[in-house]
Amino acid sequence: MICCSDKHITRNPPAHPLVSGNLGSYDVWKPRPSESPVTPAEAAKTLGNSNDRVRVHNLSVVLRLVHRTGGVPRSSLTRQTGLNRSTVAALVGELVERQLVVEGEPDARNQVGRPSPMTLPGDRPVGIAVNPEIDAITVGVVGLGGRVLRRVRRATAVIPTAEQAAEITADIVAELRAELEPAHRVFGIGVAVPGLVRVADGLVRLAPHLGWENQPFAAMLARATGLPVRAANDANLGTLAESTFGAGRGVSDFIYLNGGASGIGGGILAGGELLFGADGYAGELGHTIVTRNGIRCHCGGAGCLETEVRREPLLELLGLDDADADELEAALLASDDRAVLAEVHRQLDHLGFALGNAINALNPRLIVLGGFLGSISAAEPDHLDRVVAAGPLSAARGQPSIVPTELGASLLMIGAAELALEAVLEDPTLG
Image (cartoon, rainbow, N blue to C red; front, side):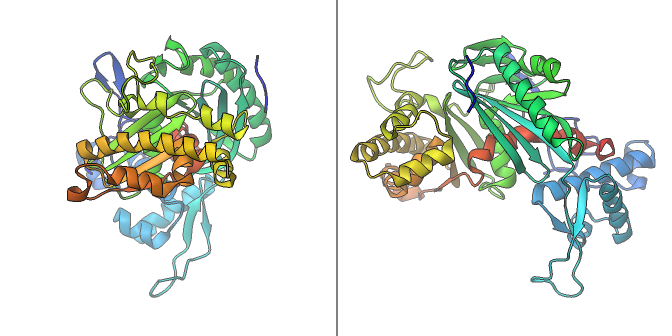
């Protein structure tokens, strides 16, 4: 029952922000490379296409810059694209007409000379983000610039099947669309799945905590909503969101680790590229062994990080039936119960051990913690730092910064929405 409560220039970029590649038995993805504007002369040489295609491409370049920065002076658009001022003005003007961007008052701070108007993300285009978990389905409405406009979390009394999750999600989407339209236009749905996903068609190969295997969830949801649906692994989407809009901006080597009701997953950015491994399994840091003779894990091992570091004991000690990451953090910070503190310390000991191993192996500059991992770290940050610093190589190599996600509970919503908004980012004339 359900209870409510940019490294090289690409002239012909792929139609999807996540480039799928067949690695072993399923597809994986990586962030699309950056783009450069194309002049009509270049297009004639490299593409043999019309000026209309050049215009669409350059509209995309400008819109992506506005989207990723949350707003940029028009003079900066001219500088970053290398296009002349009149061309940029024309591109921005068309995007304004399509209600994809708006122009705001110039930001005169730290500027020399005449201030330039700000180009800001428009409110009309939105994407719907979905994150199915073992105890709830969260649906969000996200605008350009990574702005979360609405988030609905609907708890489930039992772990939903793929069919049930699609039905529940479709009901929430229908309610949200009734509120949103016609002021907003929904361009699609993106799904952050706690499992292995074939990006080409959204088939969930395996989501062990949900009990889903070879489930065409994206197709189910598309039929139920009438909207285009794309899906990808939740930790990879979280890494994408954090590197674009959060604490990982401008950092080429970092680890993102997320804790949710369906376990612990991770994403690794190395040299500015997501690390996948030979068959796409890299980043499964939740299955780092942190203790001998520990709790048996569904993977067949015992003492895995995700069996020893869990949200449920924290909720029980706090007397909570449910809580998202932000609510859990607030409850932990407000608690003076020694049993709660002891459990936080126990979990941070295991987390710190796993992070120490990851640091020794990967030498990241930054570690970003999301979900309930960010919650327990925020409750006792000094404790986690001490555990990690006790690692044998930390003194010689230094310790990376360990920070919570800047995006908080909205992280997966923002990451999933990147899938949904890709259509209009790729071709702004759709707007």
